[in-house]
Image (cartoon, rainbow, N blue to C red; front, side):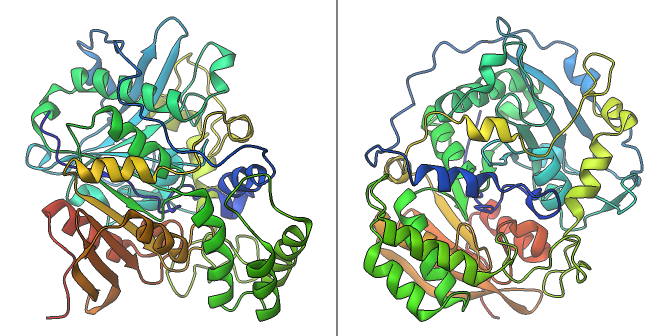
Length: 471
């Protein structure tokens, strides 16, 4: 494989998971809150690059043709191909991961991008494909689709993977597999890629990227570390460092005028997030006060309306419908949709969920920081982009800026505004082997809220250049 890039989109960090708005899920928030009380020392991501060998490899003859999607229910006619199905990663356990591929109109001339949603425990198809960067979004009727003109398969072939097993349509016949963590997720994703490329061998000679969001801030660097000599990557709104996330949270709340001066000062004076389990009672009290003061804003986009509220029409800032995840839930649970996607493996409809709360609660190994892994990838010559929507309230632009300083890279291209459709799309600063990009007016799910701006900066990344400044 000619591999030129890994694109890690922690848009939810961002990305992950559009599901939170209408159905009440907040997996990343739950995971972070749970970890505040865990009695363990701050620890680094381990080197996973040599731990999972040999990799299971099975014959894939004829499976590509069986996976081709004829037409999705309610879909408009398009001039690109789609595929979906299961790839076995452990035959002994009966563990298989589900994918959905949306090719570009000229697939042979475009790179392959693997997209991972985070959570952990949330679906890349329901979120990434159906509410963010995929070619189709679901109408309010839950039965028909509308075309997303700013889909990322305009410039690349996008491979959406539901990972780990137990997320979305992915499954295992061994129930203990649903208690998992970072290492197993990386190993299974790698096994998926090896087998998928046997099923689609034409992509072995094309450039390869990995993209993700939110908790994929862990998934992407660790998967990249398994294939270190093959890839480079980008990260956006990513959860990559425990300490920076908590320090950045309350700084961002304060600078966004969501909490009072007094509460912010109390947190600064009483909170030490450097060691898990060491948070004082005074610190907890001030944190609780902060969450009361900010009120019922949608934490993944602090300026967006809530689904079900009296103002639940699409946001005036982003024009994104806050109930989109409800429409996707209805659509992906329709028997005819599951049949078209080849997801009905037993011939009986399955219950699809956008996020698996049980997997999130039982998540095992999880380093506090993956910054050393990112530094390792940068030192190897891999090109890294880290991007952040500036209205995200869960993995804030402030958090990401704290982490950028820890990477210690010198500035090569000073901060400047970049443009999309004649307007400032955000801001950018180029460092040695790492670039930081903001997307103006975007929350945790950047392609959902600002699709044109997201496509502009993603296209620049694919082309190997910085987003355009003002002409």
